[in-house]
Length: 475
Image (cartoon, rainbow, N blue to C red; front, side):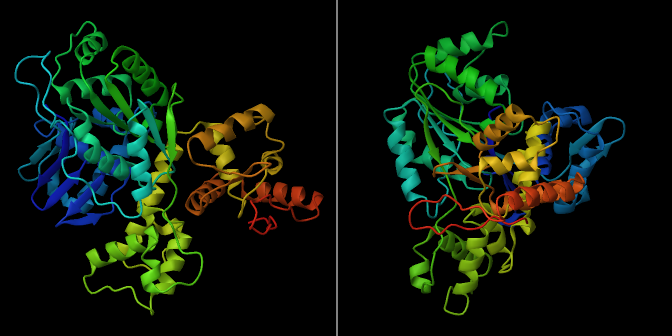
């Protein structure tokens, strides 16, 4: 079975690489877990899929209650109708919707496992439309020429997957033996990488040593391999990519995710939010900024009568600014025409943050939720203050946890001396919710207030020239 990029049935489309669900051509809000459950049922639509299989596919390496499956099944049924998924008592679930039409990633070579496949093995045949990313796209394309490993990193919802898809389409002609798209989100492990490479390129693997047989077949090939969501299994991805780079010199890797793998000669492109006007502008001037241009495009797709004009420009710019230029949040707000959208109400972005949160260790989650008390950027000394008296978080544990949060693009480091740290507003809202759920809000605010009092109530913020220092206040 070839990896698929699109499943379609009735009036529904599931776009795998873009992680989008369309009904009658319109994007639907679906959680990450519900999306993965539906994908697993479509992949195995010819049979019943047990709860245990769904747990392994959707929550790899996590211990969760089995009723989580039922919750996600209910979410899918709410979108598609109860008849789309059948419950087989005592066995599991089966997709029971209309006939499924599948767009495959590519066709296997017809002349045997060692034959080189044609150059049309790209996973994504249609280039997605990008707004506000021309410079990032050009930089990535330039880096792929002299370097064999390029990391595309950034926080969840910033548009890494869409940018990687467009890049793959634009540069596919450089790779005579094709391109391969590997998504680690559904099941991140070494086998996923090996198996997807083999299936996409039509390589038959030996059961006794699949990696070695893959390496032998890949040695003469020039292929671009895109691995998305590397943060799900960074250690496994790093191990396999290092071996492939050493043994198959014709492979080039684009590694997309919230963190880099720290490979030798790995080039890093960090993706931030789309540009937002910093001062009052006219509607025409605002359209030169990626965030506003994206909002306008998505709003028009939802309502053909929408026009960016003098009456709504201020509200649109303010919304884009509050959403910090994050494309996923802007897309959601624009298609629903919510000018008062707040980060915490942007469901798809919240789901992306929750998925990142699930991958953290207990001490990283603890530190993250306590950092939510900072409304602005903050120095390292105040990081220690909000975790004081916690025996689980000594100095080295705090430093390790903070480093991991930075590496995973959850905490942002501002380029100043001494370093300053901050959370995106959407991340801060989510972390604040976790702080209250853990009943740690009062104690953490008290620690911060005491630390600020010892500093006279304010702390000058070290910012680049041209920025005014701001006082730190408890949230």
